[in-house]
Image (cartoon, rainbow, N blue to C red):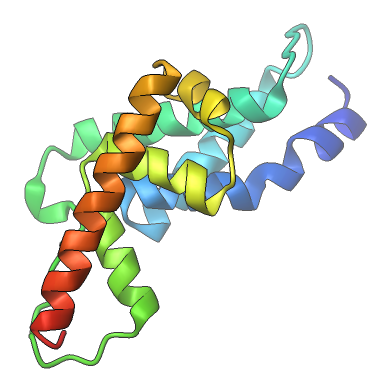
Length: 159
């Protein structure tokens, strides 16, 4: 892949990769680092490697990089929290949804992000998550249900 191909096929994915990484690791600095590392690796290996679907390869690489970062972190205190520090804070609806998404288990969070935010079809999500479409539908259903429960709970407490 030449620089022109790389600029056309890979560079435009940067924002999408960042949003996906941010949804996994929960921190913008780590998400930026993961995306940068993946793009750098793809750039260094562009010659001699034939990647049929650069977007799928990049998304899977970012996912794996983020999972590696989470494994290295191993400290629950670093993971995003679902509840605010003080119950009297004024949260916007967007912040509530982001917090509810962050509170989901990783697989549900990944599936929901890819489906609802990035707009991927179910079969592509299954390929990215190395699972089948039925499992993706289960992850989406359970994730939506859990988010609904959290949002209703927080709205009832006036958060």
